[in-house]
Image (cartoon, rainbow, N blue to C red; front, top):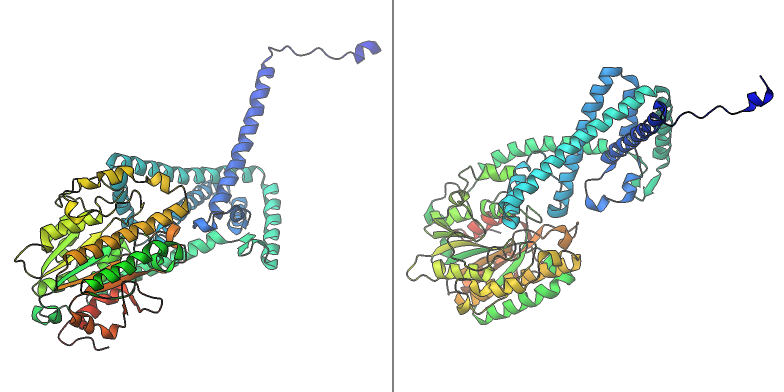
Length: 567
């Protein structure tokens, strides 16, 4: 063979040969496999490192080395084939479930300023769906719930499949995986020893998932014990067997009205940005009520809830027990515990509940002791909704005046009136009209049409805070205006907040305190509470007493009973 022949390049393969088409496909398969492996690793790391509070959800949170990943590598390296796959699938699914718990925590911290209780809070999800139905309708709420369920299943399935894929990579590259695991473990130990931090308070050597599991296990154990302790506490009641003629004797002949103002929290008074809207209303209300012959005293109560779930506050106030979760609430309403309403009923008062946003039969009304309940079905409102609130507070009070308080020849009454215009999303907001113009509520149609939409307001947290404060100012104005115009000589009005607003308004570190005020014309009523130390006026100051909300029932029943307050 000639030198020229040996140097001549071989002929090119035909472009239609089978290998020419297969090569790109093999390349794409390799790229796809590597991409899926990288995505699986990213998903597992993200699930291990994602925090359970929005304030901690920063890029730095994901720049850490989780010890759980190192333990996972070690386990997968050691285990044989089938066992490795089973452990990977189970571990991945468990990690997905823990991620869902963190997601629940994110929501609860954002709106209720606490984490999700794995023992007691499942019932709140159903109630949350009810609130969503009230806001966007039945179909929209069901569609949203279905979407959440699909997403939750997808999270568990994807983390399980990601862990399974990574276990296969470890099996095929056992030596490299072992070396990588040893190297990363050494790095973790060094970072832990030196106290290396991504940012202050956020260590590079992370064990957050382990701490999270341990904390939740402890909370579950505490929740089980709490329920048992609560069942015993329900039976301890110094007023259980008190006869009616020995209850509330110092309020004989009085009309007692308790009014909860939605989301009326301490922040509305203490936060200057909110107080600029609320303080003038409290000052004007104090002056107007004083001019009408009323005296006022105010203090603070510490609510069991924050940002929502008002019924936990209502039941705490009424029962004299701290009802901080749905499990306790459902246990309570299945008992015969004497409520504040029940005490008035036993003592001979007519008892009335006004719940303007209830749209269905309310069996809890029997537990509380109401003879009649007025709600969205029978209050006669013909005007528009104001987002979640079905009717303006002024209409609720006008209907209460027309149907109950203003009736001639009636017996002394105890009423609880819930005011909801200050319920999130605080847009649009109603405005006061002349009481004689309230009618069937259609007068408020123009206000709802001209008001801001929730979408407009919630684009800016500053606007959210301002509209919240305006809503509280409106609710307080409506109530004090009603008392000034219609309140008789025998009226004793107790009004309070149910809880603080959501953290977007109150902040993540706000207290659970809410204002409480007693208004009365009869000086003897307020003389009776002198030992309480409450302050004059509608606005409690920084030094005003702070009571647990569950302390009110017993203190009230004792003070206005035959013996008076011994304090």
